[in-house]
Image 1 (tube, one colour):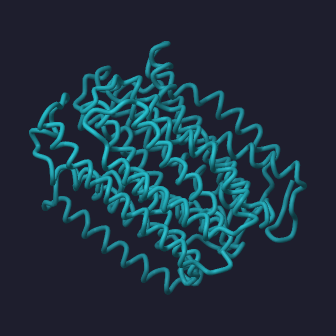
Image 2 (cartoon, rainbow, N blue to C red):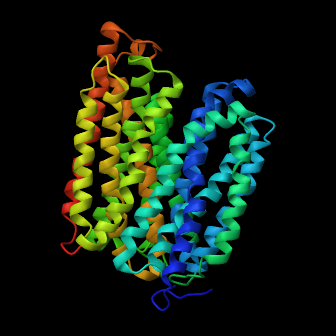
Image 3 (cartoon, rainbow, N blue to C red):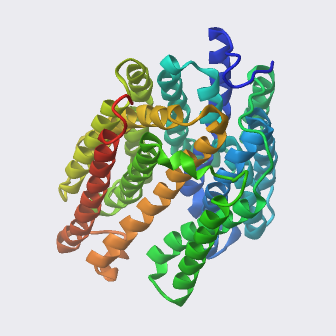
Length: 470
C-alpha cells in the first residue's frame, strides 16, 4: 500500500491496523530501557565488573538514541517513514539477540550502542506515521492510544525483568525481543503505508554537528551530576556548545537543512516542544528519586518498590487515550495546561512525604502524577505534530523525541545535583536511613520535588501561551 502525504488517507480499519503495528514495535523500547536498570546489579555481578563500567550498559543506549533522533526524523522525510521504522525494527531485533549472547561486559556495551541505533530509528517516526495516517479530528485519540504502549512498556519492564531473570538468566530479557520483533516486523510490513515527507538530500554536515552537540550535551549532563564541574566536564560542555553553534550556522545556510528552523517560528510548535522537555524533566526527577525514598527511608523490598512505581505508568496508560480523544473535541491547549498543572500539584504532595509512610500514601501520589501526565502528553503531542507542515512530519517527530530524551537526562541530573548539594555525602551513601539521617535525606528530596513542580508549572504556562486555536 502506498500513500502520499495529504493525498491519500487509509480507511478507518486500516488506520487502526497501522496504529497497532506501531504500538507493537513501540512497546519494546520502553521495556528495554526500564528492564535494564532493574537487572543492572545482576549484570554487574555476572561479569564481575565495577559499577562504573556496568552503568555504560543503559547510558550508551540512551545517548545513542537521543543523539540520532533528528537525523532519523529527516531521513524519514526523505526515504519514507516506513523504511526508517522497519530498518530500526530489524536492527533492534538482531542486536537484542547479540546483547543476549554477549560474552563480556564490553561486548554488551558495544551491542547496546548498536541497539540504540535501531531503537532511535523506531522512536523517530511513529508520531509522523500516525499524524500522516489519521485525520486531524482523530489525531489526539490515536496518539493517546499509542501512549498506552509506552506506558505499558515502562510498567511491565521492572516486573518482567525480575521474572525473566529468575526463570533463566538476565540474557532472556534481551532474547525475548526476538519473537516480539519478528511479529512486529511482519505486521508492519503488511499494514504501514509508504509515506514520505519532504524529498531531498541529507544535510550531512548538519547531521554530524547535531550528533556531536547532542551527544556531548547529554554526556555532560550525565557526568556533571556524578563528578561535578571539572576540567573534563567543562571541556565536554564547551564541545556541545561549539557544535551547537556550528549546527545553527549550517542550518541557516543550507538549501536543504536537517532541521527547518522556521518550524520554531510557530508558537505552538516551539512552546509545545519546550513543554514536553519540561514535563519529562519533572517526570524523571520523580522516577529517579522515589525508589531511593522507598528503599532507604521506609525500607521497602525491591518487589514492593517495583509494584509501587508501576502506579505512575499505569495511570498514564488508563488516562492518555481518553485525554487524546477529548483533545480532538475540545482542543489541546487547555487540556495540556491542566495536565501539567496536575503534575505540579502531585510533585508538591511528593515533597511533603512523611518519614513513615504506607504504600497507599506513596501510591496515590504516584498515580496522581500519572493522571496529570496522561492528561498532558497526548494533547501536547497532538498540538506539536498538528502545527508542523506535513512535509516535515518526520523531523517534527524527531524533535519531539529529542526533547523527551533530553528532558529525561536533565531530570535525573538536576535531581542528583539538588540532592547532593543539600544532603551530606555520608547520608546519601547510607543504604538504611533512620532518625535524623532520614529527616535530612527527606529535606533534600523535598526541594528536588519542588523544583520538579516548578518545571511542570512552567510547562502549564507555556501550554496556555500556545496559539488560541490549539
